Amino acid sequence: MEAGGPENLVLKRNITGGIVTYNNAGTIEKCISSILSVTKDLGDDFKLYVYDNASTDGTADLVAEKYPQIELIRGKENLGFGSGHNEIMKELQSDVHFVINPDITLSQEVFTKLADELLADESIGQITPKVMNTDGSEQCLPKYCPSIRTSFIGNLPGFSYIRREYTRASHVFTGPEEIQFCTGCFFGIRTSYYKELKGFSPEFFLYLEDTDLSKRVLASGKKIIFEPRVSVTHDWKRENTRKLQGILRYLKSLHTFFKKWGFAWR
Image (cartoon, rainbow, N blue to C red; front, side, top):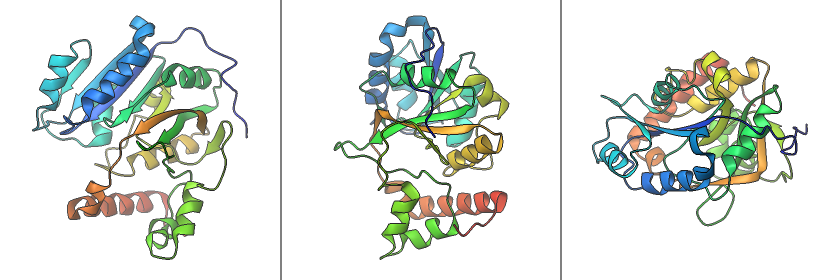
């Protein structure tokens, strides 16, 4: 499937971005600065929100002091990734909203290009760009929804080919294509549709909340589009999923996901 390209541009649109933080003092400045840099020409047509999940490292104070133009919401407790974004969703009045990780940086006008493509095609539910590592290599994120085979067998020694199938690492994307999974680190969605879906499910504190949202987008009859002609950089590290607490949270979310959507082998 080829989606409508950026040549059919929607010239007037109001865009918002939302970042949920929890002890991100080390990365949030770089993230926000890059966003403000690429959106400076949009003026009042762009607004950035930060919801802080009761950080203990001074993240919220840093944002408030350095970026007074940003809408900062201070949470009283750690609600998790998805529920934090849902708090931002309550404030939105834009045409298109972008969910953004606090370790994302941008070097090009990703927002306008993806927003225009999204608004030009009513059948698109979510749109996500190519995601790069800080060393310039592509971050091969899943393009299919998880299964027992990909979630467990694919992580065993000697079965890396399953992981490559899962991420479509061998496929060359030259233009926009439909995928089954949209990463939560950066994506765009119509704000009205986002609210219609009620955002992220509170069933997931952390991990697979983006996968669940993707399933609900597809179940509603909309498409998820991967747009490789624009990119963002994700300074992602595996520390959380290598610690016991992170592993347990991931397994809990995985069980919740499979219980909700079915224990599919493939």
